[in-house]
Length: 300
Image 1 (tube, helix red, strand yellow):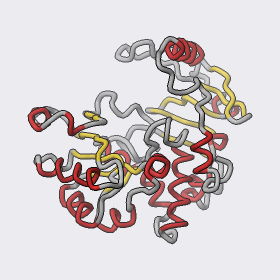
Image 2 (image 1 turned 120 degrees about the vertical axis):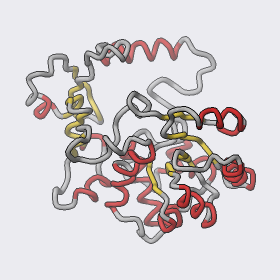
Image 3 (image 1 turned 120 degrees about the horizontal axis):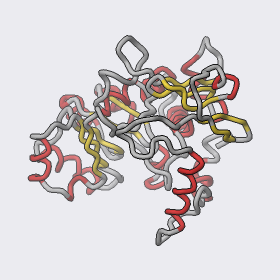
């Protein structure tokens, strides 16, 4: 799975939640710069206004290979065809779509048109807590609404090579191969059915996470196989012991060598000092979300 901070060098990504508020001159200037992807929240809703956002973006001459749309809920065959012709990308966030709007994008239609599809949670308030949970939401929709037309392999591609393409980092991330960055996630499951195993996996099933060749998280017995990891911290995920080794020496990343325990203290202190408070720290009020998704997702 794509597990990097996507906007970190050398990627060239510009992200905007409300792209149409910027205006044409802003985006025309951006087009002359070095950006590989404009990742934008667009057509987030089900009404005509949400659909019109797509056509506004297109009418400004901005729909091209650099466009990656998050949401696209009301888009249909004509819009998918336009995106495919422009080589644009879609990031599917089904959990958030269902909770906020009661429906989600027509992914089989987008796939039929040839649109590149990635999958990711929208944000913590309405999306899944992690990509494994988001995969389960997507698979349940696939089974209940689309007769299981999306295969486990396609779902795996949504969070690996397709995601890398949507982020404009496909030349060095998103797959295992010579010249690609060693970003690897090892999970428990049947090795003869790896794609189905990914769809079935829960956070406790993650045995090892490697980012750019560096083991940073995993089961103690595996993390202990790397004697060069000097700074390891204990953590607990769903009642299962894991080890973290996120401290690195990176002059370009401020405080990269700070222990995770200190990072969490800093985050909690910053949150307690903020106002207004929109959620309880590390205990988000998820009753509404659970009421929507609990029937859909076993063990959510």
